Length: 267
Image (cartoon, rainbow, N blue to C red; front, side, top):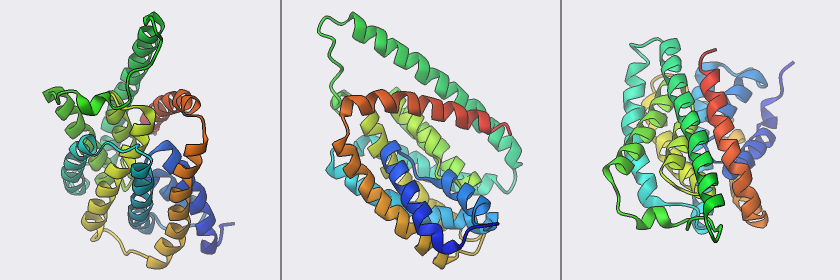
């Protein structure tokens, strides 16, 4: 038994709150729910997912920007790479088997996840050895000189996120989260900046995927009406939560999420 499409706003509301608090575009959730719970074809699910990601990430980006969680200069590095990745991914999907592409991404995500674990352990040791025990300034990333490695990380992470979106119809969240984390952003900045990057990736993805399936605007409106509301509510709820508690939660969440997504690519 499958659910009525008129329950999509409720599903969208829950997803919107989740992704605005945790970061991401929700593409993986959308495709799973649309195909599994609402019996919508994969072809339609991909196009609806990408179209729904646009207003969701736009609303979340505005809310996070107002909350001071978005780092535009860092984010646009990933946007440039992401746009290139989406276009390339839309082409590669026609010549490379999806299974091969998923294995490549799986290896990348596992490597990035492992790097995140090591990085967090180093930060914890450094914090314990510090005399005052205070964390680094959240805005330190923007004030430091931009190195070639920093730029490379941004462009590569964005490109991989775009490739994932272009080839698999997902938002490309895992590489984006991993890239921003490795670039030294705080957990809240990772969340806010990621939704900004994913907005531009989704926008490009809709254009490049327009030839792969018919876009059902009724499904988009039903799902987006819930996700936009959730994307606005999420950051407001985030303001009421203790930031130190959120930082402790987000770190492990990002790492586990990246590793699990990497493992899932092999199945």
